[in-house]
Image (tube, helix red, strand yellow):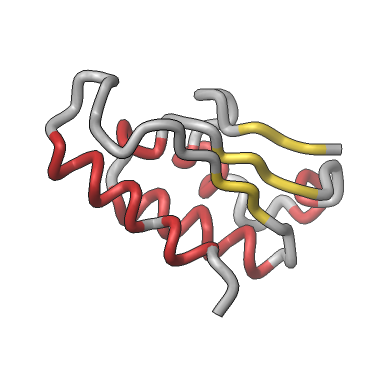
Length: 89
């Protein structure tokens, strides 16, 4: 099963589940499609670290290299930089 971050659950909500081990057992992969630009960088980073803690692979889809969702380009690029946190090292 894949869990998507299409606003629900949001990154903030995902962080609130940090100790809810049973919820993390309900899916195999997390797909981040959009929405990273609408939450604080540290919130998204914390959510990604939580997924790593529970050994959940992340699929990160970015369709545009420029902001098209109403946020400034610098905010959008900061969100894109999060991709480096989920890329294989």
